[in-house]
Amino acid sequence: MTPPMQTVDVLVWGGGTGGVAAAIQAARGGARTLLLTPGAWLGGMVSAAGVCCPDGNELTPWQTGLWGAFLRELAQREPEGLDHNWVSCFGYRPATAEAILQDWVRALPNLDWWPQCRLLEVERRGARISAVEVECAAAAASERHRISCTLVIDGSDRGDLLPLAQAPFRLGWESQEQWGEPSAPSRLRLESEPFFQQQPVQSPTWVVMGQLGSDQLKPDPARSIDPAGVPTLPAPFEQACEAFGLERTIRYGRLPGGLVMLNWPLHGNDWHDGLDRAFSGDAQAEAELDAEMQGHSLRFADALEQASGGWLHRGAGFPAQAGSPSPSLAAMPYWREGRRLVGLHTVIEQDLLPMAPGASLASLPVAANGELQSIAVGNYANDHHYPGPDWPLAPKSCRWGGRWSGTPFCLPYGALVSAEVENLLAADKATSVSHMANGATRLQPLILNTGQAAGAAAALCIQLGCTPAELPVRRLQEALIDDPLAPSGVAPLWDTPWHH
Image 1 (tube, rainbow, N blue to C red):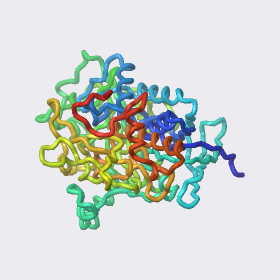
Image 2: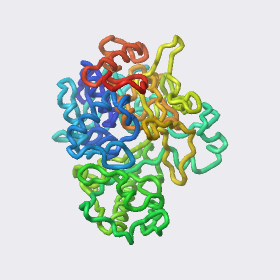
Image 3: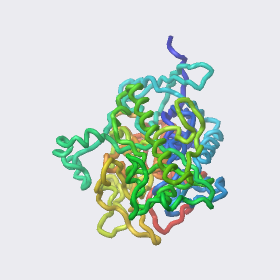
Image 4: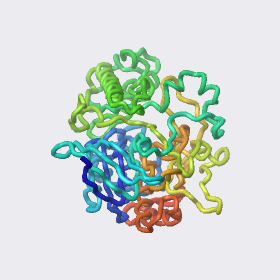
């Protein structure tokens, strides 16, 4: 039996950070919008995945758009403030972020949100997506729905809609010969070294939440690990605290209320094995991968608790849900990378690097006619997660305000627009970037504003009756800059306040 058809202007698949931002902005732009998420929480890495110590866009000139609005709302709702850890300038509880996003969604009468959905089919007619079919478990009984839509946005962490839409995408590494990226491996290495088959994407993490004891309770000095000491953590975590000591390692991701985000890369709870299962389409294989990741993170938390003499123990940061063995586990894994759209413009590593030695800006993306194409600003220094030593990357950091910051770069509008499917946009990590560039474009602040741009573009396309490729970039830039609720800067201006 064919499920009943419903019709919307903009359909957003995936509850990732960029997907939620896109749905909110499309609805704020007047489009009838439907947001479909696989889980019961919104926000992806900023809430459901528990990556609550954001990296990038830390300086106030770049606290614009939905990233800036989100940050200022967090400051209002976290009475202890946001400065608790040393990995980031900010730290907040995942439930606080989730409450903000749900409030923003509920405030929009033309935005519907269906949680706990499974994407079954994407229907295409020629170069256009005409409808999607989903199954929603959140209903009284599991129901199938068929939704017709004018514009589609993939707002998932792993680009889940792209293969079903038969939209061209990239997954994994590209050789240095392809684009001349200085940090990319050679074609010979890609073809001959098993590492690159074993690590098709950056290593994900299943974040686990810890809880600190009273500030009066300190770790037993005899059990602490300092750079000169002997590790007391069990294998495979024996080297996790060697560089910083146990106490500083634990405080790495401290949040309000004494919670601790445990998202430790080196010999911690990053996961490296069998990652191809996440992209195989095999539900059983993916469930097995999830269970392995969860168990690994819980063992890491238990090892830190043992080494700290009980000063740290498992915390409760997430809602109890089916399939999760502990409220200390995030509602979903933190995927740093997934499928990447083949777009009208592909961002490569050189687009992120300083224009010259010592320069504070990367080159700005311009069209053949000289018009600026940028729709969002990022500045993360670039970071790749794999087993073993840090991957060597071309430097893109600079000094500003007494600290190291990443060189600002711009994401062009063409990186959001599918080169083949004329009504498809990407809003999260599935934008058209290279594997190497993904290490800088994947962070929360830029993804929030990338999603905002995708949503604004979709609303403008509905208003103007055009496809995303036909949309004048200048119209989109003006809409972002003049947005009444979350004005977004589209170019990096060091000396201009966020509200200018």
